[in-house]
Every structure is written in structure tokens, then in C-alpha cells.
Amino acid sequence: MSLAVRARSPNTVRKLNKNKLYLLGPRFWHVRGHFKVLKVVDIEAQMSIVQLSNGKFLIIDTINMNDRLRQEIDNLTSNGDNIEAVIGVHPFHTLSFPSFYQAYPKAAYYGTPRHLRRLTGIPWAGDLNDSSVRKQWEPDVEMRIPAGAEFINPQPESTNHFISVFVYHSASQTLHVDDTIMYTEKPGFLLRLMGCRDGAIAFHPAIKTFGLQQTREAPYLFRDWLCHVICDWPFENMCCAHMGVKIGGAYLDVVKLLKNTEPLFVKMSEQNKMRYFDVTETSDYHTNTNINGNECG
Image 1 (spheres, rainbow, N blue to C red):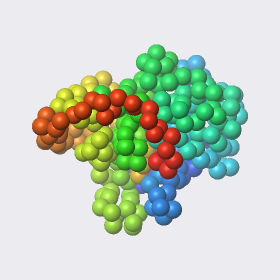
Image 2 (tube, helix red, strand yellow):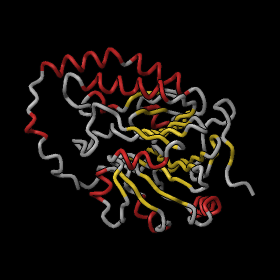
Image 3 (tube, rainbow, N blue to C red):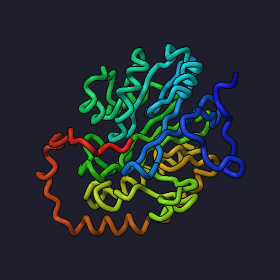
């Protein structure tokens, strides 16, 4: 029995079904989950599974599983025995980690600094802020943290969900990214009313407020960092946390997005140059880090 459906191009598959494994490329599976805002608008959540060269599996992000998805993952990973590690790459995507850990407690769990602070019931094996941790699964999987943004404790927690670890799987030419870049695929009626368009790609709205550090250099640090990502990672597919996955053609879309955002980078840099930035305001980066209700996955 097949473990997963092979996802085809956007011309033949318009949207991936929820709670079902899709094979996007060699040794890379992806699954979409539900995540509802105000209990009405489903903006989706995501999880990716990579088979490493040693035959073990790396789980990138988690979602709430139904029985069918749990069975598919069990079949793929020998009931979880072959899951080498589970990683959380977005500080505010925390909600499904406790239940996933209950299902697969033998795996090693790695997260952002905020994962480690909030989810103390999970025996974390390491922090993705540590470059040596991020390099553990190379060359199968590469990870990078964007420059010019706060990763340890993004503030304000209710709106600044811009930062995430970018994950690239070279064998399938797939980029997994949470929130920093958003791709909208076949939005429902309510999302269309909110202005979402099919096939639209954008940076998270927090880029215009607190997503990047409020210094003159920060917008250009992020821009240049993403330029290096584009040069180094020839991705074709892009899995975005909310609202869609781009199968094929993602690279050119991100190149265009970066080019179109250049005026915003210039504007933000000039605004930050004029703003008085008191470093004492951010000296205590671990204040109010356990606020409830700010999770987005």
C-alpha cells in the first residue's frame, strides 16, 4: 500500500487535502493541517517529513494528527522507531508539540528558544539557535536563521510572528518556511473578503512593524541574507505554514518578491535612521515570554 500521494504540479492539483501525506519530491513528504482563527477562518498549519541518508526521519514542525495521519506516519517510520528528531522552527508554532511528543516520545526534540521556555514538559535535546544543532542533518537538510530580526524573543508576541528558521532539502529542492514568507493558494470565501488572492506571495505583515529590528541596517541585513539564500538554495517547491504550498516555480516567485520589496527596505531604513532607538527598552529579552494566546500553530 502506498504511504503517500505524489503531489503534482499546480495545474493538476489545486490544493492539498488536510491530514494526508504528500510526496513532494525524493524523500520529502508534506502534510497540511487545520488551524482556525476566531474558530471560523482556517489558515492551515504544516508539517514536513524528510528521510535522511541514514534511513531515519526528520520531522519539521508538528500538527494535530487524526487517526488516518497517525497511521500513515506509523507506516512510514516503523511506528515512530525511525524518527531521529522532531524540530520546531517557528517560535509561535507550539500548540501541537505536546500531543506529538505523547505519540512519539522516543525521538529527540529540538526547538527555538521560545519552545524550550514554554514547553517544559518536553525533554528538549537542543536549541536551534545553536549553529551546531542546525548543522546536525547536513548535507541532507540545511537550516538558516534570517539576519536583521530578533529570534530569541520576538516582541510583541501578539503580532510579531515574522521570524522562523528556513529549512532546505536539496534532494527534493524544497524550502520549508513558517510565516516569514506567505503563499496563498485557493483562499476560501472569508479569506478572499480579507483581500487574499490565489497565487499571491508576500512577506509576513510584521515586516512593516516589528518583524525586523528597528535599526538602519536591519532591512538591508535581511535583504542580503535572503539574497544569499536564493543564491545557495535552488528550491522549486516552497511549503509555507499558512494558506498554501507552492509546487514548482517558487524560486522565481521569491526572487520577484525580494525585488519588489526593495522600496520598502529603503523606506524602513530611512525611518529607522530618524527614530531614537533606546537599547534599554530591549535589554530584558525574557520578560513576559510566557504570555498565553499568542500561538499561531
